Image (cartoon, rainbow, N blue to C red; front, side):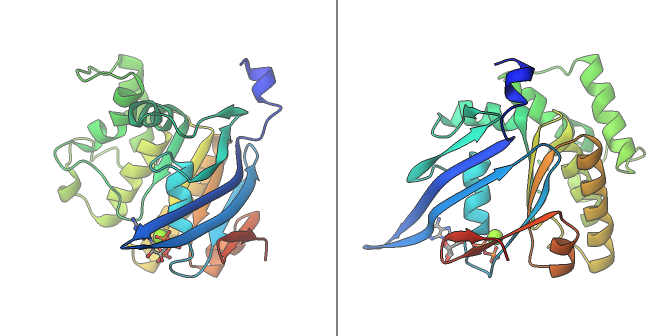
Length: 237
Ligand SMILES: Nc1ncnc2c1ncn2[C@@H]1O[C@H](COP(=O)(O)OP(=O)(O)OP(=O)(O)O)[C@@H](O)[C@H]1O
Ligand SMILES: [Mg+2]
């Protein structure tokens, strides 16, 4: 698909997603038909009480789990229900994901963590970053204020710094879609607010669509659109 065709489609289109978990002999229905569209540059908050299914939905959209039924289209192309390897490559090149627990690789430096999606996107077990990719990763770390921390490992960084590395990692492939699951949930209020502003600023500058799960009404209010998960379906409050 060329760019002019893909521009006609929403960045993300989810149709009637259903997801249940088997627990013992019973089934817990978490998502009972979730549909949503996100357009380029759109910033949307995903709200809902604890256990309502926000992380479940983000994991489906981020191709980390499969739905029971329904479909997910990225720029008009169906991306759900692929193999684990194909899903990982799509995520590495087209979907940035920021987790509550940062999820950095502890053995790798900040710079290597940021470069990891490029390695996965190219499907290489052996990887030597291209010069231009390394420059971009360094620039992203400079942009998130970590120009002096390139060689630090995650355990040598503060929580806020680790999340800023994770933001740089989510943006290294210039993805059209960013998913964030309570990205400030593990940070103190002040640091969380700074990290969130940074995430939104950098995503907006790049025109990415964002879906951001949060419990914080102030954060949700700063997004252009709010979705609420209730009884397994999305409502706009
Ligand atoms: N792997 C699993 N197996 C069984 N049940 C699960 C599994 N993962 C999640 N659940 C259940 O699905 C429901 C939705 O969980 P989910 O983590 O998506 O909620 P959430 O909205 O993200 O909550 P929180 O705000 O606390 O993060 C919960 O009731 C949870 O217990
Ligand atoms: Mg959650």
